[in-house]
Length: 266
Ligand code: ATP
Image (cartoon, rainbow, N blue to C red; front, side, top):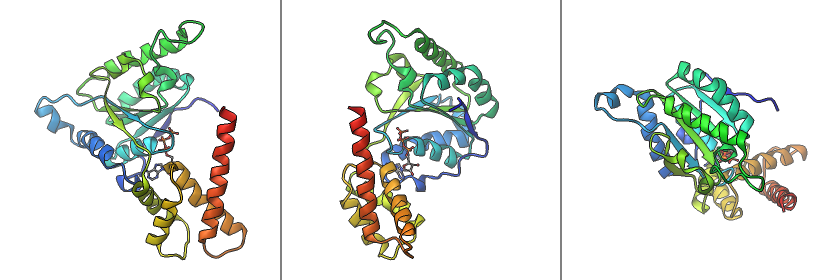
């Protein structure tokens, strides 16, 4: 796919209510939302607002979703760049000017590990110069966003422990917000967000509780996937509602997909 910076000029339309659970993480980003909404308040008192926060946690548990909700709640544009170092390289090329022109805004860097790994540990062949250059540039750009500016950079990572410590210094990603995988209560909440999107007949509360109990280890993304797969299965079988056995079949399918994926990976 072509490197692109995805910009949502009119914000994302995602709200905190779309993010199930994650109460502590929401609390932490609330401060950023308040700053983006009324920066004068903070400037008056001489407060320096954090420029960046690291959202760390396993895949599919809501890092991107929470970043979008932060932009949505603050009603500011959302610039997102993902993953591989090409994308980030492009961002350090044209992104900062765009971000400055659009502030107040949120910049989201998905999978910052792609460029953010500790320098001087580039594997068997010594350093990876290109990646390290990109990382250095990124650090320079972040330092260039003034501390009274209104650009908040959020970055997602599965491996905070591998990141270069320079990224975590004050004035850079100096806050770490952990996005934990959902426990059974969290899964109930996530089902409650996604089940209303499909037509079911069962009592909604009971259904969410039942499905949450059946899905230990599932991430939010997998839960969203189960709900949609169940609706696909029901539709293909000409049913008028999505029934419990459709959810069972969907779970098998999602688990099957996961097993295949882990086979490929090992
Ligand atoms: P990755 O590390 O793979 O980028 P991520 O943590 O950024 O993963 P998201 O992209 O935020 O994961 O989640 C993918 C989808 O899963 C969301 O768009 C949403 O539909 C669903 N989802 C994940 N977590 C939650 C949650 N806490 N509440 C509601 N839906 C969720």
